[in-house]
Structure formats: C-alpha cells, structure tokens
Amino acid sequence: MVSTEDLAALPTPDMITLLFKCHKSTTVLSVLPTTPFSEVKPLLIAALRSRNIETVPNTTTPLPEDPEGIEFGVLADKRDPSKGWIPLDVKEQEVSGPKGTKKRVGGKNSVLNESPLGAGLTDGSWIAYRIKATQKKKQKEGQDEEMTMEEGTPDIEINEDPGWDVILPSFEDEGE
Image (cartoon, rainbow, N blue to C red; front, side, top):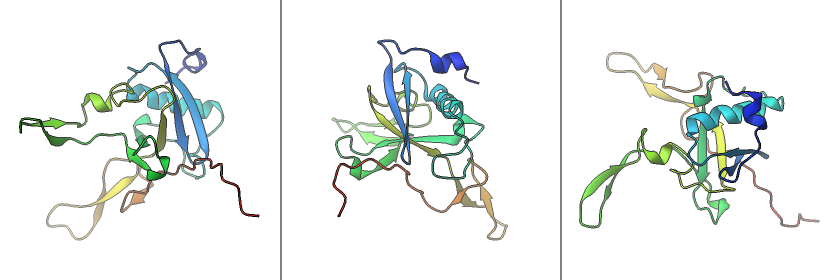
C-alpha cells in the first residue's frame, strides 16, 4: 500500500516526471529513474484513488486491486504519436550480433522491463496505461472447445489486442 506521504513527497532533482495517459486523462508522477515498475504501478493507482477516481477513465471498469493488473505502453515512435503505442513489456527474443552471434534480450526479468531507466524513459516521457485483459485459451487435449482464462482481470475477455485508449490533444482548427 502506498502512503499519502509517498504521494505528497516533493520531487528532487534526481527524479524524472512521467506522464501516464489514459483516454483524455494525464496523471503526472515523479519517480527516481531506477524505481521498479512494480513500485510505480501501486503509486499510479494510489494517485488516481487520491482524487476519488475508482474506474479507468472513460470506462466503467474498476481500478484493479492488484497493481499487476495494470499494463504500461510507450509510443512506437517518440517523434510521431500518431503511430500509436506498444506494450512496455519487452518479450524475450533472439537478436543477431555484429559477428553473427545470437543472444537473447528482453523477457520477464530483463533490465528493459524493470524501471524507467532500463526502458529508456526520460523526464517528460509519456506512458499509456490500461487494465490487462484476459486472453481466451483452449484447454488441453480431451476437452471440448471450452475456454479457460489466462492470467489477468477476470471480468474482461478479449480475442485480440484492444489497443490503447489514449486521445492526444490536437491543435488543428475545427470545421466551421
């Protein structure tokens, strides 16, 4: 549980400011670049609840009790927000090195997934957030087409990625 003192603490020069976006809402948090995302998620939920926000913006979905029920995303292209968002969770993949050597990067325990510093986030970076949705998954052999739920929020089922509900302000003039 995050205390009120944690939320009210003044930023220090070594902290970075992250802008958490969902729909038209932006929540600003100052954290140390080395703060694990596992500590940032409860801080975000506490900040929302401190403002009497009990649901995800623009939905009736309640904020999760477990901070791991939140998923973060970053801009696919930092210079062009119109290209959309990608999950911050870097999946394990094999990368070829300069001399043809292959190595594995990413994965659950990767430094890329641990903190804003590891993910390459800097002061003023935008992070989208959403509730993790469950994926439908067929049960193993011998059972009919019955579906089971993978890890995630139990009341939301999806067949594909729902996308990131982030609306960025536009400075274009509206039609007359």
